[in-house]
Length: 416
Image 1 (cartoon, rainbow, N blue to C red):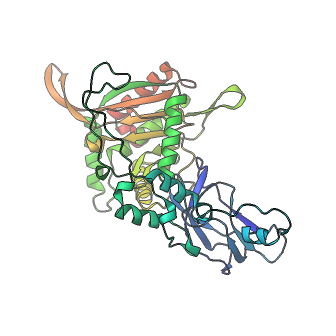
Image 2: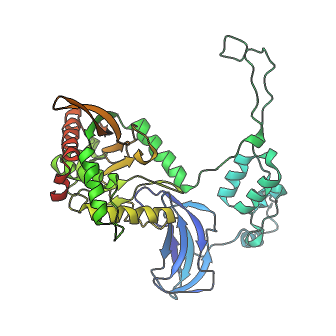
């Protein structure tokens, strides 16, 4: 008997939720068969079987969330052995009647509901005792909660009585008037695995990493002209080049020249700086499930056209939630671009354990004096956020100077 465990499908994954079982108990399984779809902190991934046999038992039902390494099913490979789980009913049947039996479980204790459903019910203020489960064996599933929420929205958010007008609230020096938020005006959206991971990692980064920021800008008039010319030559193939593709290439070349920025922090041995020999750029993508950061590997050695094709493929796979673990791991530096939304300047939070992230805004017209005449040029602002434990301000400044020079002399991107 083989225990099938919740796998580790990404470098940040600590737990996963069963989305869909593709096999049921009694089904024959061959190596390579898709057993289950697992929702991780970054994507929805398929898990294949590594051994042949018969799926004897499913231990974690659809919708349940468990830690990596937890047995989720058992496969009978014909070798026998292995621990067989004993049900509560079997244990109860073996109790000696002469011994004082344990108290009979209450209705609430006998409820068949996954931990996820129990947590959601508590958050929504829903009493599970009043719900008839539609899942296997009467199990209460998430859809049952959603159906109940639709018929009883008032149970979603308990509303406290507002203070009497003129009442002084503790901690305030003057009377205030408060108005309760009607429950019907609030929609609760529980965190899924992706959003929980984003919240955990970014909170960790914002509260534990001593970060500093440095902003620079470049005259990208020639860069935009190069992009327009490149897209004219690729109009037939459709391999359009974006400003972000050019920025990624420039960042990769700058990292090759300044390897101290192509680094990660390790807490081992009291703290270490890990300098990476290869340049793998993470691209922050706003997927429907939340923020994901697929990786363009060896971006310093790739052509701009290759970067453009790769980023579009990764963005499409992010939207479909079909990114693989290898496409989401191994990044050494991240680029986050909000320029397409008209954002001119922002700061980004470091994606640990990486040492730095670049926030890129939109280009805008700026008045410039050239040869004694006032003219308009396109300028692009970008802000570097660094982990001060492993990167110093002077290193950041030198990196930004090189990046600015590359963006202002874009032909260097074609030969780098």
